[in-house]
Image 1 (cartoon, protein in one colour):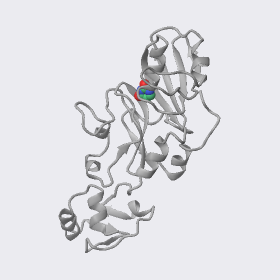
Image 2 (spheres, helix red, strand yellow):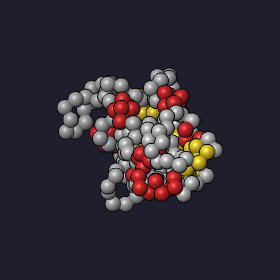
Image 3 (cartoon, rainbow, N blue to C red):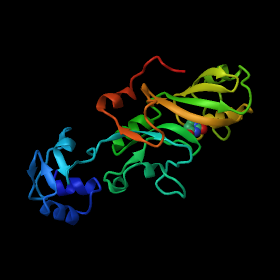
Image 4 (cartoon, rainbow, N blue to C red):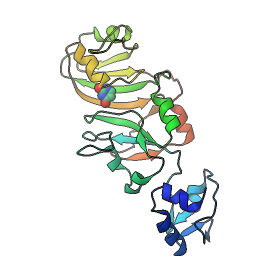
Length: 244
Ligand code: URA
């Protein structure tokens, strides 16, 4: 891909602005200052380390996958009032092409693991109902659990209001009188909150800590993100035994 197109697509500026950066000697590949915006580059995995812009390694190439620790109060949307999940990423990434999106959504009042990517194919593979990727939630409740919830959620017959298809079996582990860990294999709108509302309880706190075998590391601070390696991305699809 042409250097000017690559950097413009990564949000560093218009092609004209990139041409000026090149002219100013700001763009260096393997220690050699590049002279032409039209130079073609192979998009190898190590390119971000080898290509420097004003002395800084460039951002991850298109095809990146991010693991974000979503804080409470942030919305997974490009255009809503208030704090947006995109505010947690570098400003220039708003201009990236292809665009960076969340893979599914977490409610404004839910914290925890949310994935983001600019890889449309990967996005569809993860959210596709065909794949049944497990998602694990730590749930805090307003009322005591009765003991009836786990068998009902696991039954495969539970219906949510306004829907005509029963929920897939879900796995509930009760961890205290008012806390539980729930693993879902699908992602319907407000699913966890609606499941508990359907049985007369109310979710007061909700945090996602795992997708597939990929766990939110305790070291990833609230509001920060990391770029996943291909090996970490593969963990989304591996079917480990560690539910609940
Ligand atoms: N279920 C919900 O109710 N909310 C979320 O954010 C995720 C799952």
